[in-house]
Image (cartoon, rainbow, N blue to C red):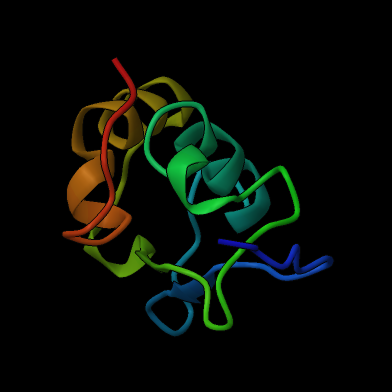
Amino acid sequence: MRTRKRRNQRPIIVTRLGEELAFDSDRCIEILECGFLRGYGVGDGSLPAFGPVVRLDLIPDGLNAAELERFLRENGAELAGSGCRQRG
């Protein structure tokens, strides 16, 4: 089976209008790539036609940088979609 590599594609990111997080969405995606988005090709240029949906709108308000990073790492599977798998 041949797979096509798709370049310059990003996940679909859902946010709340006007919400400001301690990190921008690119940094949040970088953190999620470490354990939850890698299996979907994020970071290696092989995303499917429609990338995974990343639900940054589920992040609680008021988290500082350390709390946000911990929340992303602990809740990445939920944020990155039910089909995402955590690397072990």
